[in-house]
Length: 257
Image 1 (cartoon, rainbow, N blue to C red):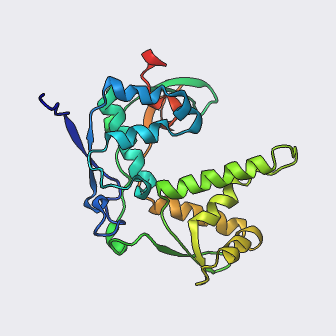
Image 2 (tube, rainbow, N blue to C red; image 1 turned 30 degrees about the vertical axis):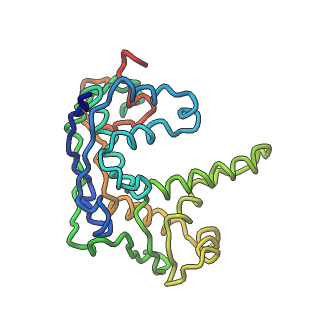
C-alpha cells in the first residue's frame, strides 16, 4: 500500500525562535504544517473537545509535522501564527467578520489573512534562548521579572480562573479576578524575590494601578505576536484600523457556520 504524502507549508514564527533554548526544535523559528483533511475536520465538530475548549489546540497538534515539538512550549504569539496559517491552508486567506466602528455602528469587514504580519521587534536587545525579562515600574521603581506566556502558562491561568469561578459561583458579589490572576502567573520575581506567596501578596496589595497598566503595556510591546489589525471601511465610508477578532468562528468559513 502506497503511503500518502500530505502537502505541507513552512510557517515563520513571530518570535523567530529567539526565546527558546537552543536544543528546542522551536528555536529554528519555523514550523512545518500539513494541510487539513476531512478527517481533521472531525476534531472541529467534536462536541466533547469543543465543550472542553480543546478542539483548536488538538487540531494544531495533529497538523504539526515535527512530533518532537512540545506544544506546551509554544509562545502564545507563535501559536497564533500557526492558527492563522492553518486557517489559510484549510479554508483560504479571506476572512469576514463584523465589528463596531468608531461611530458605534455594526459593520461587516473582510481581511486578507496573508497580509497579517508579525510585530516588529529588535531581538538583538535580548539574550537568545532566554525567556526572562526585567522591568522597572515607573511609580514604585520596584523591579519585576516576567516571562512571555506560553501555551502551558495560559492553560495554568485558565485552570486557576475556572477553579476560582467554581468557588465563588454562588456569590453574587464576587469580583472577577482575571487581571490579578494573570499578573501573578506572568511575574517571576519582585525585587529579586521569587517566592510565589511574596509575588501574590505584591500583586494583591502593593501593585499600584499606574504601575500595573505600564507593566501590561510593556509586556504587550515585547511579546512576539502577529499584528491583528486591518484597514476596513466604516459606516461613513471612511478607512479605519480595526482589530481582527480571533473568535470561535475563525476556523470555520461562512458556509459551514
